[in-house]
Structure formats: C-alpha cells, structure tokens
Amino acid sequence: MEPAVKVDKLGYAYGDGKFPVLENVSFSISAGEFFIIIGPNGSGKTTLLKQICGIEKPTRGTIHIQGQPLSAYPRRKLAHKIAMVPQLSYEDFPFRVMEIVLMGRSPHLGILGIEDEADRRLAHNAMRFTGIESLADRKLDQLSGGERQRVSIARAICQQPGIILLDEPTAALDLAHQVKIMDLMEQLKNEGRCTVVMVSHDLNLAAMYADRILLLNKGKIFDEGAPGEVLTFEKLERVYDCTLLVDDNPLGDYPRLIPVPGRYRQVPSIKKK
Image (cartoon, rainbow, N blue to C red; front, top):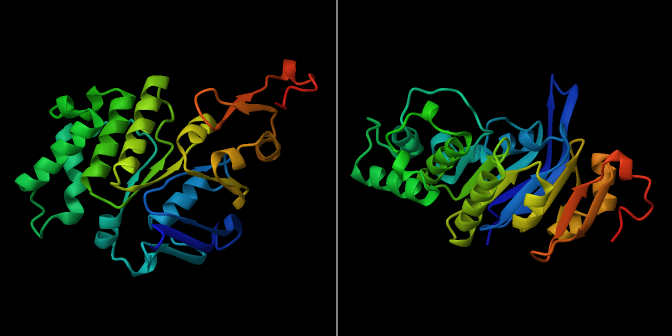
C-alpha cells in the first residue's frame, strides 16, 4: 500500500534561498497512522505542515500524497485528500457553527456552490462526532476556545479527507479540552476514517497518542520512530537545551517527561531512571 504522505529530500527557504527553514527532510506516513511532529520553536514544524498541504511550495525535493505528486493535484482535488486545521484563531467571524462546518463541503459542491440535504447530513454527523451539535445555531464569537477548536475539526471532518493536518490544536486549551481533542483524533484514526498528522509542543500528549514521532531541530530531522525511541532525555536535552526527567508512565508503555527547574539541576541522578 502506498504511504498516505511521502516526503523526499524536502528543502525550503525564505528570501530567495537566503534563510533556510527545512533541509533534506525525508520520511513517510502510513495510511491510518497518528503521526506527531515535535521540535523547538523555529525548527520548521508549521512550515513542514504547510508544505504537505500545498500552502507553500518546496524549494527542493518532492511530496507525494497517496502515491501521486502533490504538484499533480489541482487545488480542488487536493482538498478531497487533505484537510488542514490551523492554529486556534479567535477572530470573530460573523458565521454560525453550522455555516462554518458546511464550509468543509466546498470542494465537493457543484458550480453553484449550494449544499443539498446530503451535505447537511454530513455536517450534522461531523458536529455530533465532535460533540458540538447543540451549538449549531451559535455564532463563533459566542464559543469558548475549546468549542471553536472542535468547530474547526468538525469542518475538516465534513470535508471527508483521507488525511487531516493539525497545527498545535491543543495550544491555549485547558487540560480537559486538550484530552478531548486528542481523543477525537485517536477515534478518527481507530475508526479508519483518516490519517492524522499533527504538530505539537506538548511532549507528553505526543508520547501518549502518537504511533510515530518526528523530531525536528533547526530544519532537519533529528530522530524519527516510536515515542519510546525518540523521547529519551539524551535526545531531548540536546534538542531543547534544557534538563528533563524522563521515566516510565504508569498509564502505559510510553515515557513521561517532566522539565526540571533550575533549583533541582544539581542533583546528579535527576535525569536518569
């Protein structure tokens, strides 16, 4: 089976190549995988996501989506394959939730752009799946941050893509909403609805939910693999330049990570299990 996403020797730079952001990045993502991209600020995570969904064109290298070059997809056809959930926005759009979720049907509509009953049924199903069906008639500016994020995810689901890309979907959310968003993504993956590709700064959430993790540093791949292989204190301290305690998580077979405050860093064994 062809990978859902295949990236080969990808490079990207701003300013006519003067400011490199990504260098020689190669990896593949299997269909139905929960793939999380991590790394410090400025490591190229969001830029990589924009490359995969075609918002920005690579300076070098290639991207294949479900076996075909990304460049071969017309925008409308690509929207059948990929949906993007950007970072949480608090802009006050004058739209109701139902209208926003229905925007996900745009790539599938005819020349008049008018939704039919089947489109509305898909929108209701997406809202039911994300737990926002009761908010259908509410305006976006009347919702909390967590509710807005679930609206964005419902719109992406309504688009019926094979791949969902999410850029830090749990940023600025409280703990309960973080877990709800991650559980939704895991459910999407487990039900075989789509491949989930996510950028995250939360290493503990990445450890708990990811099938595989890609660790970026300064625009290059530092490591890739299962959470237990990538999230070691030796690797993370080199990349993040801070002291970490990494031990076994009592909830499962994946690591737990704790940043170590300066007052504890003189303890010789603090980093090791």
